[in-house]
Image (tube, rainbow, N blue to C red; front, side):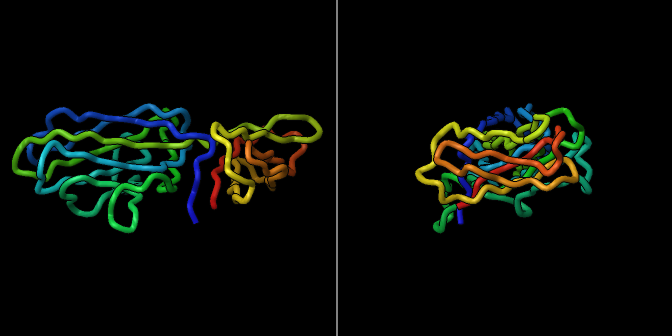
Length: 196
């Protein structure tokens, strides 16, 4: 199974500048929403490295309890996730559902340079904003319209919401679908992505 981001993805590119040996670079990059699906993470160091560690946190305080993603102890060379079968960069997949618990619409990134010399890094994160808000009075629903049409309607939308309601999908098509709620006056925020 693969995940397709039919609604399109948004990129974040961070250039760290010089990170001293043993130092940690932190950045809080703006997102379109507090809830996003991270589709791809890539790190390109300035040269052959002894290693570095990339981490993503739920809070800007970057406490260990708030760690959502981390590379292995020390990455050498370029880092990609997801990867294809040969270890190279994969075009699309779903890596991580992310929530900024500071509610500032930020991605809290940390990169530690484990090398013995100063290095710079380019951090690339691609994400999808899977959020729609339901609205209506009798037949509550929200429409999802894809930025790029699907080749067919043989995909599986995964849907969850911010309220204790039942959500279901109708009208699967190549250009989108409709999400419904069991609550006739729902104003829930709904998160979605597609699986194939």
